[in-house]
Length: 401
Image 1 (cartoon, rainbow, N blue to C red):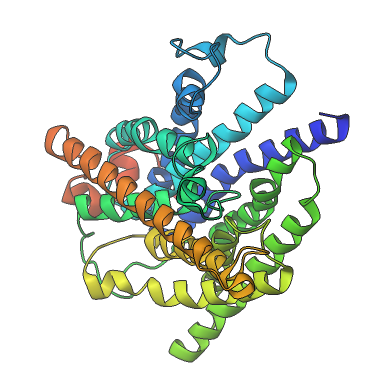
Image 2: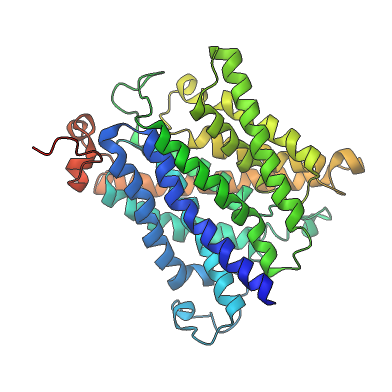
């Protein structure tokens, strides 16, 4: 690794780590004022817990047939003082993905989850779900080998459509079912309390996504870094346009939260495909994702589950759109270019497998926590605002008396 790649590896890793505080801002502005501390603390707590768990056991669990210096020693990464710069940075870069994947799930249970129960869930889900899925996708596991085993092209998931987006979105659905609906759940009842805070978070997320998608190039040959950055930008921009268009058609007004959510939808969709599309197809993907996710967030009202901050509608649906789109339009291997549906077949198998595993893991872990220590805060605490009840703090202490 030359000095330029080393510098980019450090910067990209910091950018992805910065996305988790950005997510805290994004989510924090969307909840009610008396829950903002609780919402942001779930991201902060996840950053601390999953980061430590990655160092202790995650790195070893996320590689299939890992080298002997990891075998049988869960503390190997912590003790690996002789590791190279590249090895340590690669591990930290991967840790940042584990952190934000778990933090994303918290948006589904906003306004009503106990912090201690969330932390227990975050740790268990990271170990039992994210670390194994990461091994399947990026660590030489069965998804990485699926195409070869079937005589088809390899599964494409450059930066996390499977391991991050579908994993977090399907887990969010499971956890929303476990905790049930918020008090007075209904269309238009729960409005964002601080839109500027959400937009600050969106800006941080968009900035960090360039490290998220293009950071892995630091550990390769950097040959696609320009393409990845361009695709990341145009997909996010097109997603914002698509969402605002649907808002204008449906409601007569385009909103700032909608513009930000559409951009996130486009970024989610381009995550698996950023290195395997031309920019024109990245724009098309962003538009489709923005439109699809704008409609998908309405599913919670039609189907009766309370995904507070639309993790399912944006991350699960956006991830599925991005993975499926590759089956048709992936450069050199997509069905449109080859006349062969092989790429689509492996993409769909991988996506549905990760969806099912992550959903069942989250459902099991969440149900056990709910039936033992209790996952959901009391109705009284939810109505009063769980910031003071759970954390003893106020997000906005406007009256000194």
